[in-house]
Image (cartoon, rainbow, N blue to C red; front, side):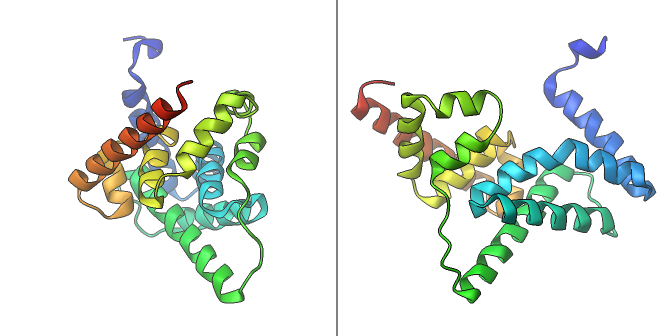
Length: 191
Protein backbone atom coordinates (compact mmCIF):
# COMPACT_ATOMS: atom_id res chain seq x y z
CA UNK A 1 0.00 0.00 0.00
CA UNK A 2 1.49 3.40 -0.96
CA UNK A 3 2.26 5.77 1.94
CA UNK A 4 -0.52 8.15 0.82
CA UNK A 5 -3.10 5.36 1.20
CA UNK A 6 -2.24 4.65 4.85
CA UNK A 7 -5.09 5.79 7.13
CA UNK A 8 -4.20 8.72 9.41
CA UNK A 9 -4.32 6.60 12.59
CA UNK A 10 -2.05 3.93 11.12
CA UNK A 11 0.39 6.55 9.86
CA UNK A 12 0.45 8.11 13.33
CA UNK A 13 1.06 4.70 14.90
CA UNK A 14 3.96 4.02 12.50
CA UNK A 15 5.49 7.44 13.18
CA UNK A 16 5.09 6.90 16.92
CA UNK A 17 6.75 3.48 16.76
CA UNK A 18 9.72 4.98 14.89
CA UNK A 19 9.93 7.82 17.42
CA UNK A 20 9.84 5.38 20.35
CA UNK A 21 12.66 3.34 18.84
CA UNK A 22 14.79 6.49 18.51
CA UNK A 23 13.99 7.67 22.03
CA UNK A 24 14.77 4.28 23.50
CA UNK A 25 18.13 4.25 21.69
CA UNK A 26 18.99 7.33 23.74
CA UNK A 27 20.66 9.26 20.94
CA UNK A 28 20.10 12.88 19.96
CA UNK A 29 18.02 11.79 16.95
CA UNK A 30 15.23 10.70 19.28
CA UNK A 31 15.18 14.00 21.13
CA UNK A 32 15.22 15.89 17.84
CA UNK A 33 12.35 13.77 16.44
CA UNK A 34 10.34 14.24 19.65
CA UNK A 35 10.86 17.99 19.47
CA UNK A 36 9.88 18.17 15.79
CA UNK A 37 6.76 16.05 16.15
CA UNK A 38 5.36 17.21 19.48
CA UNK A 39 6.64 20.70 20.31
CA UNK A 40 3.81 22.61 18.59
CA UNK A 41 0.98 20.34 19.82
CA UNK A 42 2.40 20.48 23.35
CA UNK A 43 2.64 24.28 23.19
CA UNK A 44 -1.00 24.48 22.14
CA UNK A 45 -1.96 22.00 24.85
CA UNK A 46 -0.04 23.80 27.61
CA UNK A 47 -1.38 27.15 26.49
CA UNK A 48 -4.89 25.83 27.02
CA UNK A 49 -4.01 25.31 30.68
CA UNK A 50 -1.59 28.16 31.35
CA UNK A 51 -2.71 30.97 29.06
CA UNK A 52 0.84 32.30 28.84
CA UNK A 53 3.27 31.89 25.96
CA UNK A 54 6.33 32.08 28.21
CA UNK A 55 5.03 29.62 30.77
CA UNK A 56 3.87 27.27 28.01
CA UNK A 57 7.27 27.32 26.33
CA UNK A 58 8.99 26.66 29.66
CA UNK A 59 6.56 23.84 30.42
CA UNK A 60 7.16 22.25 27.00
CA UNK A 61 10.91 22.37 27.56
CA UNK A 62 10.46 20.63 30.92
CA UNK A 63 8.17 18.03 29.35
CA UNK A 64 10.59 17.28 26.52
CA UNK A 65 13.46 16.94 28.99
CA UNK A 66 11.44 14.61 31.25
CA UNK A 67 10.40 12.45 28.32
CA UNK A 68 13.88 12.27 26.83
CA UNK A 69 15.32 11.27 30.21
CA UNK A 70 12.59 8.79 31.14
CA UNK A 71 13.89 5.36 32.10
CA UNK A 72 10.84 3.67 30.64
CA UNK A 73 8.77 4.98 27.78
CA UNK A 74 5.47 3.14 27.39
CA UNK A 75 4.36 1.73 24.06
CA UNK A 76 1.13 3.66 24.40
CA UNK A 77 3.04 6.91 24.02
CA UNK A 78 0.63 9.75 23.21
CA UNK A 79 -1.62 9.39 26.26
CA UNK A 80 1.45 9.08 28.46
CA UNK A 81 3.00 12.18 26.87
CA UNK A 82 -0.18 14.21 27.38
CA UNK A 83 -0.42 12.95 30.97
CA UNK A 84 3.15 14.18 31.56
CA UNK A 85 2.19 17.51 29.94
CA UNK A 86 -0.99 17.86 31.98
CA UNK A 87 0.85 17.12 35.21
CA UNK A 88 3.51 19.70 34.32
CA UNK A 89 0.82 22.31 33.64
CA UNK A 90 -0.96 21.53 36.89
CA UNK A 91 2.36 21.89 38.74
CA UNK A 92 2.92 25.30 37.13
CA UNK A 93 -0.59 26.36 38.14
CA UNK A 94 0.02 25.19 41.73
CA UNK A 95 3.34 27.08 41.83
CA UNK A 96 1.61 30.16 40.46
CA UNK A 97 -1.06 29.94 43.15
CA UNK A 98 1.59 29.45 45.86
CA UNK A 99 3.38 32.60 44.63
CA UNK A 100 0.03 34.37 44.65
CA UNK A 101 0.84 35.43 41.12
CA UNK A 102 -1.50 38.22 40.13
CA UNK A 103 -1.23 37.39 36.45
CA UNK A 104 -4.53 36.33 34.96
CA UNK A 105 -5.06 33.87 32.15
CA UNK A 106 -5.23 35.28 28.67
CA UNK A 107 -8.65 35.65 27.21
CA UNK A 108 -9.57 32.71 25.02
CA UNK A 109 -9.62 34.97 21.97
CA UNK A 110 -6.00 35.99 22.63
CA UNK A 111 -4.96 32.36 22.77
CA UNK A 112 -6.62 31.55 19.48
CA UNK A 113 -5.39 34.70 17.73
CA UNK A 114 -1.77 33.86 18.48
CA UNK A 115 -2.00 30.37 17.00
CA UNK A 116 -1.06 29.96 13.38
CA UNK A 117 -2.96 28.58 10.42
CA UNK A 118 -6.68 28.13 9.93
CA UNK A 119 -7.44 28.59 13.60
CA UNK A 120 -6.09 32.15 13.52
CA UNK A 121 -8.22 33.11 10.56
CA UNK A 122 -11.32 31.61 12.15
CA UNK A 123 -10.62 33.27 15.51
CA UNK A 124 -10.74 36.68 13.88
CA UNK A 125 -14.16 35.89 12.51
CA UNK A 126 -17.17 37.00 14.45
CA UNK A 127 -18.57 33.47 14.50
CA UNK A 128 -15.37 32.14 16.06
CA UNK A 129 -15.69 34.60 18.92
CA UNK A 130 -19.15 33.20 19.58
CA UNK A 131 -17.83 29.64 19.53
CA UNK A 132 -15.10 30.61 21.98
CA UNK A 133 -17.68 32.16 24.29
CA UNK A 134 -19.78 29.00 24.09
CA UNK A 135 -16.79 26.79 24.92
CA UNK A 136 -15.83 29.07 27.81
CA UNK A 137 -19.34 28.68 29.20
CA UNK A 138 -18.72 24.95 29.68
CA UNK A 139 -17.31 23.48 32.87
CA UNK A 140 -13.56 22.84 33.02
CA UNK A 141 -14.23 19.07 32.90
CA UNK A 142 -16.15 19.40 29.63
CA UNK A 143 -13.65 21.84 28.10
CA UNK A 144 -10.77 19.54 28.99
CA UNK A 145 -12.21 16.42 27.35
CA UNK A 146 -13.37 18.37 24.29
CA UNK A 147 -9.92 19.95 23.89
CA UNK A 148 -8.19 16.57 24.18
CA UNK A 149 -10.58 14.98 21.71
CA UNK A 150 -11.09 17.64 19.07
CA UNK A 151 -7.94 19.76 19.30
CA UNK A 152 -5.37 17.15 20.30
CA UNK A 153 -7.16 14.30 18.45
CA UNK A 154 -6.86 11.76 21.25
CA UNK A 155 -9.24 8.81 21.33
CA UNK A 156 -11.64 8.32 24.23
CA UNK A 157 -9.39 5.57 25.59
CA UNK A 158 -6.36 7.87 25.39
CA UNK A 159 -8.25 10.69 27.12
CA UNK A 160 -9.32 8.28 29.86
CA UNK A 161 -5.69 7.37 30.39
CA UNK A 162 -4.51 10.99 30.42
CA UNK A 163 -7.18 12.09 32.89
CA UNK A 164 -7.17 8.82 34.85
CA UNK A 165 -10.92 8.46 34.44
CA UNK A 166 -13.11 5.58 33.31
CA UNK A 167 -13.66 5.63 29.57
CA UNK A 168 -17.43 5.67 30.14
CA UNK A 169 -17.10 8.95 32.06
CA UNK A 170 -15.00 10.44 29.25
CA UNK A 171 -17.64 9.37 26.73
CA UNK A 172 -20.35 10.91 28.90
CA UNK A 173 -18.47 14.20 29.29
CA UNK A 174 -17.86 14.39 25.55
CA UNK A 175 -21.55 13.77 24.88
CA UNK A 176 -22.68 16.29 27.51
CA UNK A 177 -20.17 18.90 26.34
CA UNK A 178 -21.26 18.60 22.72
CA UNK A 179 -24.92 18.67 23.76
CA UNK A 180 -24.36 21.90 25.70
CA UNK A 181 -22.50 23.43 22.75
CA UNK A 182 -25.39 22.52 20.42
CA UNK A 183 -27.86 24.08 22.87
CA UNK A 184 -25.83 27.28 22.99
CA UNK A 185 -25.60 27.32 19.19
CA UNK A 186 -29.35 26.85 18.89
CA UNK A 187 -29.90 29.79 21.26
CA UNK A 188 -27.65 31.97 19.12
CA UNK A 189 -29.49 30.80 16.00
CA UNK A 190 -26.52 31.65 13.82
CA UNK A 191 -24.40 28.51 13.84
